[in-house]
Image (cartoon, rainbow over all chains, first blue to last red; front, top):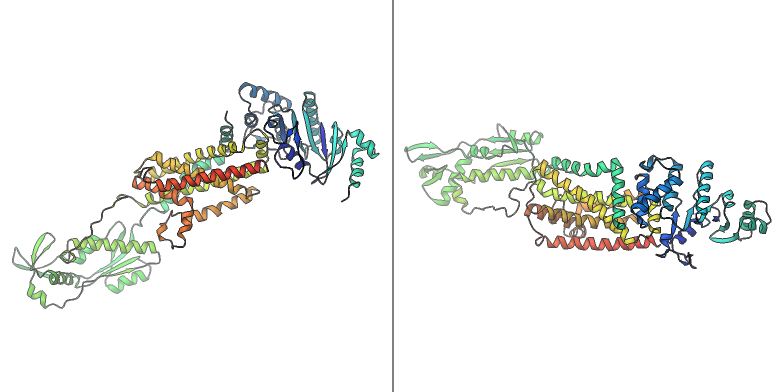
Length: 210
Length: 408
């Protein structure tokens, strides 16, 4: 689990979009699972949860899952089984036939995560998945992620909550489009000589001109 | 399942689940056709018209009884010939009163027939033929040449007063008066003088009414508006809510997205075209001379092009608010230049190339040819080719912009 930390406008979303193949990098090369980002072989293996919820409000819960499942080549019983498992994971059982527009914010959020997971991706890109989410839901969300990790999923999560960064295995600090530090949360705190990750981030930031 | 089908189904499902949008896509075409149908119900009826008929007829010698008699009055024949469906005729006492009624706005038209109208017509006929016997109302009338030759001659005339503040009503009144004159002349001695007659033969549209002319235009217009609006808004919405990004992260190819959108909106256009055609036929007795299937195919081809245009325009709009503002940008030139309400031939010559650049022109013209003229695909080939080019260019362009957006 990799955390991408940085202030607003630092380039977290851009980085994720480049890795997902939605944007082309101005310079350099983006490799995902050993292949160039956006490569046809890589696509089926990645899941993406954009900052916006990216679900269809005029579709029912199951229709949303169906749609993204079929786009990823799923169908029939495999898709149905996947939907069942995910609805259980994100605690939306019994709401399959609800229109998304009638769901609460938290439910939409969980559905959005489920849509990113529908095709059982190896690699998950989550762009600020917990912005504007209440603490209880955030807690639950990180629990889901923990379960995914146990299931062998790698996740790249962008956030500006330092406590969330602390839950990641590795953290990258990003500022003005540049990676200014990287390592485990403990390593970062150590090399900055600070108690908290937040202070560490401030230390590293000062080291960068501008 | 094919991804294009998945995307098409997804768009259709969203519209179906959103009851208001679903209802509007069905109700709008019917409502527009009904409103246009009644608002442009064809020619006005019951226009007040004042007639001061002072014609007293003239003297002839009746051949069978050898007596002096009065001819039937042509003035009365004229009044009888006025279309009573279009006009409600009121009598005016004299020329001034007839004119005054129009001046006062009490009537759209007035007609003054002078005292010597019949006499002048008869003398004219006489001068032209120099015959003592003229057929009149089926009976041969012997003219008293001696008497008639002594009368002062002048050209027969009538005076029509027309309020032309509404040019359509003005033109209609003049046309109807001319029709009445033609009817009157047919039983008057003057038909001898006219000699040459025009025989009208409607090559197409013998029974065509205004609805037949404008319904094809309205069909193309409604399809333009709804298709372009739904396309722009759905694409912009997919982009702002992030679902488009999600689609492009999946293994979906850009052309599959374009094709999916095309399929969905073709189907919607097909349903709407059926509703438009159906309501024109059922409510306004429009008759389709050509093939309904060809007409529907024609409009679908047009809708595909329009959908592509919507895809192109959606790249200009960053949000749904901007998207909506693009719609009048398209439909104002389309409705004004597409020849829906008035013929393109009526536009100044420097505007006409613009008309030729508006795809609606070809859709409306082709549909009109199919519906009124009963033309087949071989006869409407020019419009068909124009629409094929339009659709092909739009599909290619929307694939290009979608590709660019997918891998920006």
